Image (cartoon, rainbow, N blue to C red; front, side):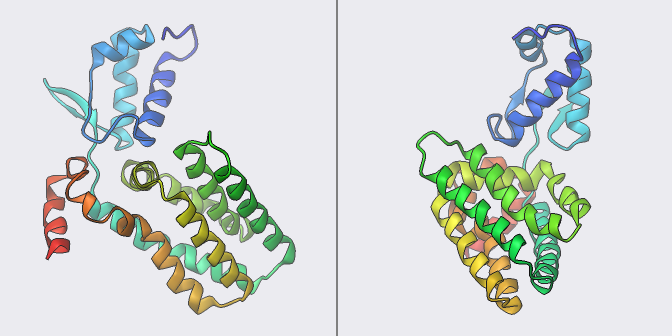
Length: 236
């Protein structure tokens, strides 16, 4: 893949960034500078620039004299991000319910129908579902003028976004997640803020529940050594 003109470093960065986020490049997988140079028809300078940007974003680890690899996931960071998102998104949803607007509800239901249509096709990808899922949750942030908060959540790419993709890519429980969205909309329409708070916590922690023991078996190599204690505690 030879890049013609333009900003080669940016092309390499954006391509590898997306591949790391959608788990085409797995956590801990080596990224050989020579292979990347050949793939993009680039010299070492722009590739090293792209690698440094990926490192700054927390997506790769560069070890002197050893090379680079996609960074491992940290369950501690993931749990903290889920905790933060539960707190923020629940508050945004409570404001959304207080400002109950039939046009906004119609918009939410439209996104539900889009998910249903997507799931009825045989060609959708996990990345397609991830985007639909994100667009659905983004709605109340937009309606309550909290776009910056949503952006902060979405920029937690190095661990949280990849963990969400791991859940979607490996478990394929698209219909279960969709049904959780359906139930959430029912609670919003009932204006049941107490139930929404409980449901959001359960929904946002769903990835940990669905992946279950696979986290400490099939995918243990995707996580840092510090996570071994967390996996051991869950096994007790």
